[in-house]
Length: 405
Image 1 (cartoon, helix red, strand yellow):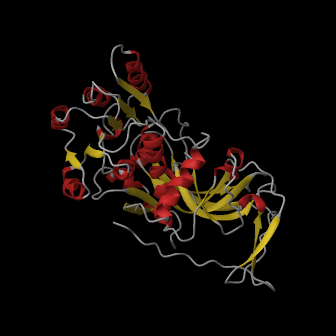
Image 2: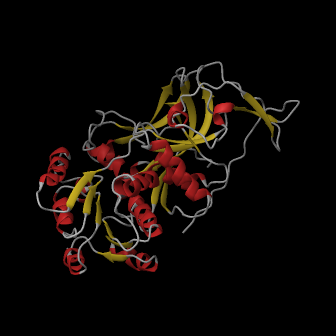
Image 3: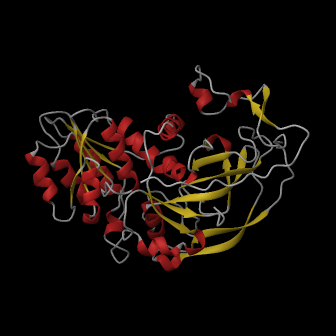
């Protein structure tokens, strides 16, 4: 399933010539260094390219102003009633920051965990959620020059994306090609970027003929994992809601229902899994460990603690740290070829931008499609919190921040 976004019109000031300023450090090079990838190079050369429409030469210094915006706030940890949309002020961007007009923000289990207060090392309430976004550059700080105003960009922010405007350091911005459906781009920025790291960074065991088991395979990251593992030639199995089993079989996946635990016996009959991806955590990691193949190298990769979400708002929220420690302690087991790791996406990791650009290129090249399960308007932000886990379909969930998008 592929969605098509209606692209927004740009409004540019008429000038005597149609041009855009491109700094030397923005021009792709086959000899790009890792320092260049982190965008710490100081631009030195300016080029002008003709555009098919009139525009103004972007200025990287502007009169800074405070703006009134609408944004989501989790006022206190607990149920959906603690999530509100409020009017607030946003200051001008700092010197190396960029102020972006947010169009779409991502919505995931991370939002639910933050509302419950169970997300690892999270801020105290009140806080504005929103782990990622896609939007257009509005104004640059006085020392920010990577992107011209109007440029389409995305970013992983962890917080604050569910707001009409956001200030963010320019080094974290990911360029989004205009040819890309911006809704799909939101899924790429976080969900698919996470999946790419899980396949290519967390283990080297995903390959042709290898058995890969994915929990929550019809979710945003799970679907991305499935797609990337299939591209690598792996045999893919996983747990999902029964309503999605038929669609998963059509994609070449063997689906199971998590609750009845039949997947454990079935995978053991097949010899075990070479890789298990488990975002559920807690007791589920013990069960996933048991289905790993034992006479060949195998790995259990944890990447979440969604058991808190599965058990519902009424259940007692548990810290993920003891479970993560127990997961990693399994690496101390002697005389076994099984191993474990815990993976999380980190925008400060040296491979982050490399992975983000690689997965974006797969979308541009048409090698992947990013299904969108549901889009909610920001003003109705309680709806996804109240209905999480009940939405049919597969793929990423979004919040429409710009009502005209």
